Image 1 (cartoon, helix red, strand yellow):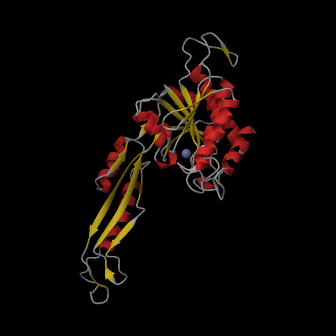
Image 2 (cartoon, rainbow, N blue to C red):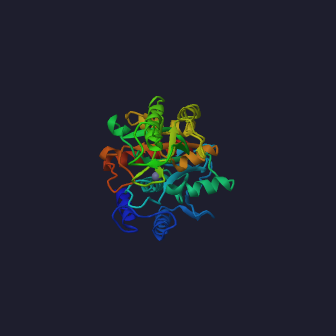
Image 3 (tube, helix red, strand yellow):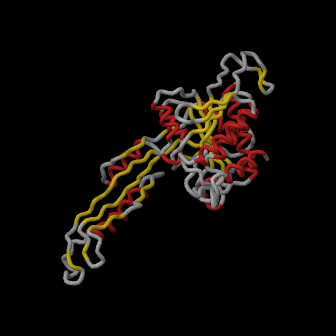
Length: 352
Ligand SMILES: [Zn+2]
């Protein structure tokens, strides 16, 4: 299958182990050049915007022209974009981003409508799509992104594909615990004000706050202990906070229950218009369960949805317990083939 061969070609760029095409690296550029040659081979009009994002446009058919054997109506639009990204985390996987790009090329070539888009720098904060939106576009009316799930839900549900309902919002900040510094040997246990002991209780409290809200997660990934001596009672501890929830109400509730002031916040994005319906219908038309699930990770589709684009994501089942950002990232050949077919069907529906 051409999609799998192209994934291997991209995987080899930048050298192993894993995929190494971080944003701004020569490897990301090389991957974009390779994709541009595939777009040209597919007969698409190749364009690079001023943010470095790569496009391949199908030539818009005139009204009434036949496309893929279907009668085209007056509502034909070539402003449905399909795509993903080609940058990776260091030692990333074969599928993250790359699958969405090679599948988009198949879909647009097959359907003869729409545009392939390859965004820059997704892994470092959706640089390319954010720049495009910040510059006032142009943005499409609709956007479809095929992506690996990067989690275990579809495998647990025994389903090859899923429709993403939206992208969780998140907030970041910190909790600071104050104590009283003291000598580790001469200060009795009773009466100590050990900031790290207080932090231990806080870490458990944060976990419980997230557990009590469905779909919410909270993570403390950094602990900074002051003054940091092995024989000194900690006087201050800073805990980093990353909290996420699928909608604004739950994100607000999580922030208030964790009790912190976010220093950074990204609103959740909902996918609820014609594009996700087209994806759901395309899955169901093949007799497969159309599992709905939110995305816990950020994606370019979320950036476009926040800018008013009718965005949708199709997830393909991740194997190996859903591991991602790792060379162990895996989806089966059969699931990949199915996902490409469904993506093309959804694009056909959106451009008919
Ligand atoms: Zn990705």
